[in-house]
Image (cartoon, rainbow, N blue to C red; front, top):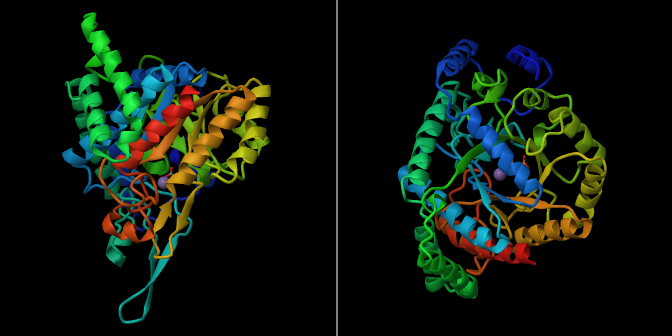
Length: 449
Ligand code: PEP
Ligand code: MN
């Protein structure tokens, strides 16, 4: 692994989706400060996750990556973090039982604050009929969601706010996952409550009862392994803002190689995966497990070129391709990629993001997705891999532990009109708590077949 390029060298390659800051001195000061702050994660933990993703790529584990599309500073509260963690752990128990393999739990949290946007600006009609154009909201890492000139101005101080919000989130996650809160029996009790109390949950009574019997059996024979009481949970985010990610890149003293120490896993978004662009270059120099989104325009040759650049040693667990074709395209679009990558002997973990190819605007203006499209894409993903004899290594979801109304359908049959009831996402719509659990049970059935 060669020396990491300077920020200037990276910018010279052309970096997509970067904010335009108007105060270079303030930006430089924020970056300098970030460079002095302690790591949020350890390189050794990143290696551990890499080994687990390698297992998932062989079918010996299953990756569950989930959380907000975009975290916000105001929502970095104890209740929110706990609810997010809780729903992911609940999903993981169901999937673990169904797949009979460990579930690798990775949150889209503690750093998921920067967003790529399809347009640099946003125009709105004001109450007096005039039009106002302002910079697009690029996530709390860059600017504010409020539609005022002051709020939408990119502010470098926010990069430091990202660090501190991520640190407190991760601190809480570490406390919850090692301090007894994540005890397997407790998580199963939450699932049993969901099954008992929710009309949707009752479909899953049989599986919940099976898990119950398995746990009762373990208890009866006196098995009480450490794994019952604590879970390994990892953080991830899209490493989008070069200033932040570069400042959080450090040389690991064990191996003398660079790691991004702001999250265990980082990924390259669909809009920044240009082979000769700054993001791919940056990612080629860090040693973390990394993801790269592949949408419907990706070709098999592009996938191979990305793998060659991002994982030249062909190390297992290093590279995850997160496909996001859309329910209508995955069955035709995915096979050529998987076939060619597999034929070339290239090591990747294939993960299904069934969210981003299925987004549309409802007639009342809300950005939404249909639960059935999400499920159909996951089903297509499994069908493709089963037909090719390759491994579906995991899923990525945008979800929350709260009862929001952002995605249409599911057992609660939320419709377009219901979206207004509790739509809180600042960017993409998320599965709510019930939809998340329902999805886990449905994916569990796919995994079992
Ligand atoms: C996301 O994961 O929130 C995202 C922006 O995805 P993509 O890069 O695939 O559009
Ligand atoms: Mn999103």
